[in-house]
Amino acid sequence: MSVETFVPSTKLITLSDSAIKHFESKLKDKPGQLIRLSTRVSGCTGYAYELDFADSAKDSDEIVEISPTLRVAVSEDAAELVRSTEIDYVTEGVNGIIKYNNPNVVDECGCGESFNVG
Image 1 (tube, helix red, strand yellow):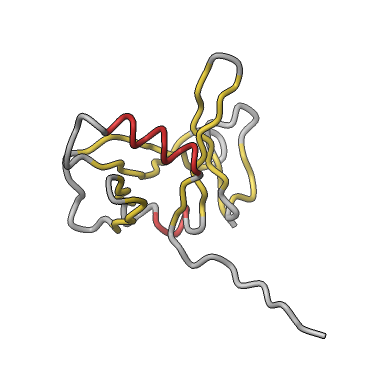
Image 2 (cartoon, helix red, strand yellow; image 1 turned 30 degrees about the horizontal axis):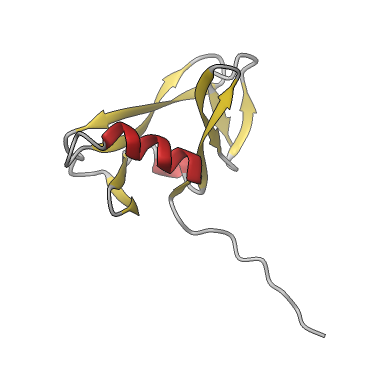
């Protein structure tokens, strides 16, 4: 008999295959640019995600190398809020939507715009 041990991910963030494909296609004509993930105080439950394209990271950002052509800079103040989050890109009808699968979230507002962590 063998025993398996669950070891949670220690990565700051991960991206699903569809999110990697989406962001790589958006950046293919923008060499050197990266994605920057931050949060801001917002909404009825606390925080909102902000995801932007950037020419460079800020000095305090943590850089996550996703692929040879895709890097994500995570702002220092957002790091603990988003730790172990998977960013996904899904198609709902004719719309493409970025989804955040954040295991730290304990409460979300009804519209999905803001979140709070425990």
